[in-house]
Length: 309
Image 1 (cartoon, helix red, strand yellow):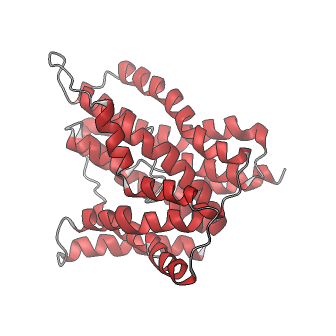
Image 2: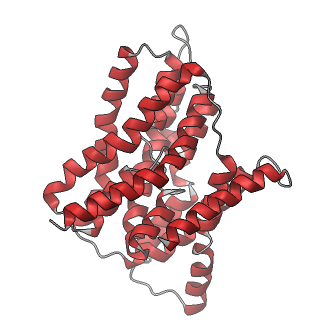
Image 3: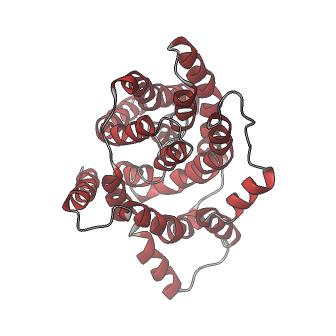
């Protein structure tokens, strides 16, 4: 509970800093850049070498892709049923399947499960969410940002591959696996630890700084659908898929909780930059972060109750 209150406090600090007008409006992006280039790679180098390889590592690596395959047809069906515009459909195809498995996920997983849950969260984020953002979401943004009569300029495989290979947390992930058998010098270990510990407060202050809540009338229906699918249906499906493997396993619980995270900030930013319902995409991210302070403890309680049966 104390860790959960700390996270809420960090978000509140971010909100207050934005309202104070003493910080530039791009402070959130600057903090995000620090996390991506410094704190998150340090966390990867800190936690991945401690992983013990086993079949439980498949849960966080595969579930994001399975959820993507199951979620996209549902979003398309709802879009046709509710007669959503092309831009709204494109935005929903990006923000609903992709969860905030790092910026919100890591602090929340640490709050609920302690440091032991972080390696599984890292695998879910780097082998699932990051690749889905880099490949699937990039293609969706390219396709849906064009009108019906225009030729969609899909990014080339070379462009996507280069984007993945130069992404700092992914580089750190490859390095961490390569260095698993090597013990870091004590000074280096302390340096990595000191950087990794900055991840949670910086991430959550950045989240608070970037929260936006204004929403036009026509976007309210899609917002409700997005929040229901992202915070309710997706973790429920993950729970159903992993039930047979035993809910008492830490890897299973972390995977389900990661599936319950709100929409990814980077996915929302991608949709906004592509001109896909920008106000709606920002609202799905903002309201999702707020609601997750209610839904995540609820899912944690459900998991602990079922695991105790």
